[in-house]
Length: 147
Image (cartoon, rainbow, N blue to C red; front, side, top):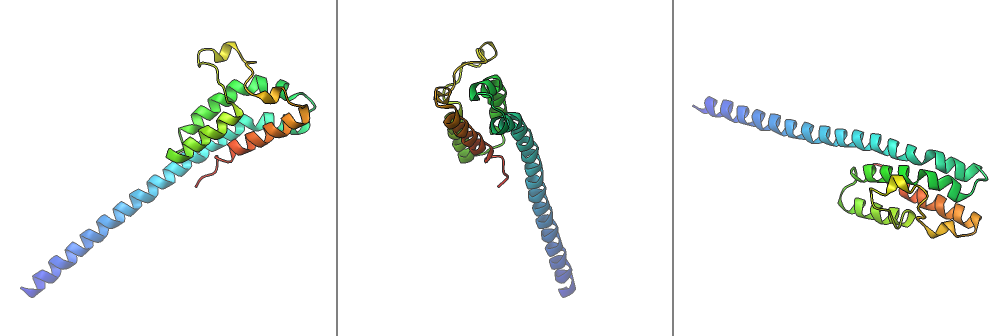
């Protein structure tokens, strides 16, 4: 009779160990999948700003001439990327983005008004405006790091 209890006990421990292993594997695979999706979204998000960052750093064009045509693209990238942030990170991301795009047109208006004046840096001295915009974009892009 004692042997039967040992067999049952060993079987039970094996079953519990197997279930524990399955649960851990599931947790790690979900995290891996979530990270993979985030990295892909972050790559696309950063790419949406790449051209304007390069132009701001190396071209003599005005900030308005560089940023105005790209604002709708940036709004769309911000909205898509925000879906991959959770809770407090999304709130902080939206606050930081509001410094770059503080007053947004209604979604239906966006295509009709690509030169909508979003920020008072359009009225700043050009060098200060350029530094302000670079700083704001870099702050926005700092959210594209997996935690």
